[in-house]
Length: 163
Image (cartoon, rainbow, N blue to C red; front, side):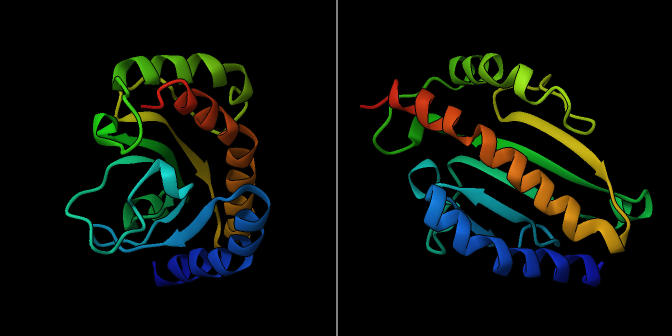
């Protein structure tokens, strides 16, 4: 597991500067419930990167591994939407946002590995991808790159909910 987590950290260091410069996206690995996912989001989407937060709110893309996923030679990715009603600067209805977002991206993500949009408002989408240790870094970069291609949909929709 540590080798996979180290690869996620390496990808953070490799991808973060370009994502921030070109798209204003923060890319950071953080500890969460015994693992260390790689998160990608804009600062105004979430407080995920705030070490002083009481609880996480907002939208963030994540890629992670667990021992069980590694055993199945998989990793997971998703876009979370937590407590959007509390996102500063916006008046968001979570279910409405989730529905609008899924409509906007449905055709754009149809070829993503094992993706499902069939969740409630907290998980906007989730998928699994296959990985071997020697291809994990490349697969992580592919998922992040794919997310970058649809991230503007979040900005567009949030703009319609500005307070």
